Length: 101
Image (tube, rainbow, N blue to C red; front, side, top):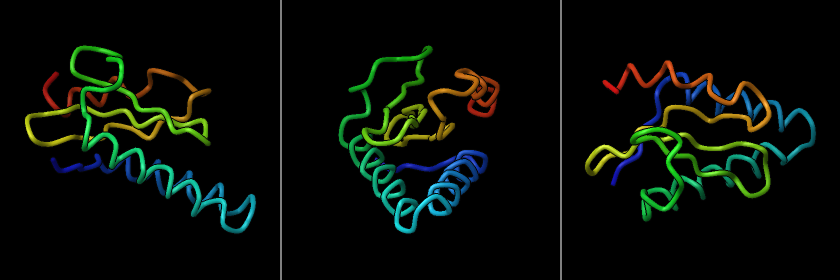
């Protein structure tokens, strides 16, 4: 399995990292480590999380209020969003058009 991120999802990851790092030195690194841990779990068990829509799932981060919104596609996984759990919960749905769903 390989994971790839839409450019907007990468931007969300980068923005969250920067925000946490400005709050406290090292907190951005902790956020990034948590996100990478979620990516590894998704790679190993892509069907483990409850579907949000047909073919799209969310893996919530344990320590931070974010979820990795992703779509398994054969042997690949496409990350649609790194979504904050308390902000506009379905804003990422328009991105599904990028993957033909």
